Length: 233
Image 1 (cartoon, rainbow, N blue to C red):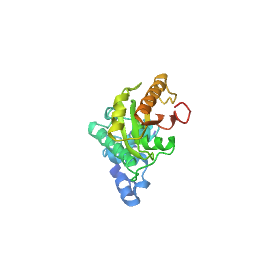
Image 2 (image 1 turned 90 degrees about the horizontal axis):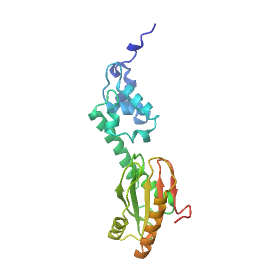
Image 3 (image 1 turned 45 degrees about the vertical axis):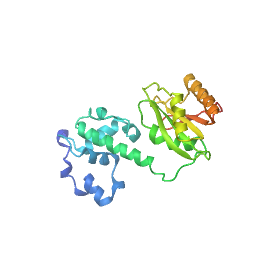
Image 4 (image 1 turned 90 degrees about the vertical axis):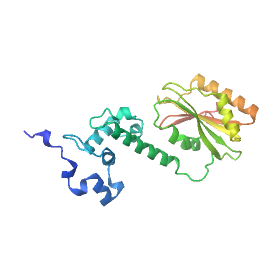
């Protein structure tokens, strides 16, 4: 009978072109699998498991979904065999750099023409979160984005959005319009009654200050709900 205990090889014993670092140098970063890229971050394996083996276990735990991988905290990652706090911090840092890269890809000031534009602009901020956050997009009269600002951060089931704080930020930046947004970590796109009441309250307050509340988006990682598109603004 074959002894499976001896089938895991140290990366150094692999053919040079199959080692992740050497493969990246020889063939370029696009030639590496997700597990091989993650293995480079992990750097070293443990007995009977290479760094790539450990990476495969981590990826399998999130169904090979990099968005789900981005949700894992240092504490979550450190639970995996072969991953200590230092390696977990390296992985979280690398994923955060990737998120920030997406955030800064657009060099010109974007213009909001529809709800999908607003969704794409806030997606880097509100994706991969395990708790609720409330954000606003500040707009000038041409609907060009002045700034995206986080208003509050809460728990799994909710966060508090203070109207005074929202309009204080809008007035400080001389915004002519704002778009509201918050995420639902549960994946449920349906607005709660509290969401509806807050939207109407903020719209009324904006009218008195000559600051238009143009929309309120509810985020999940892959979809969104727009109050304006649904005609409930």
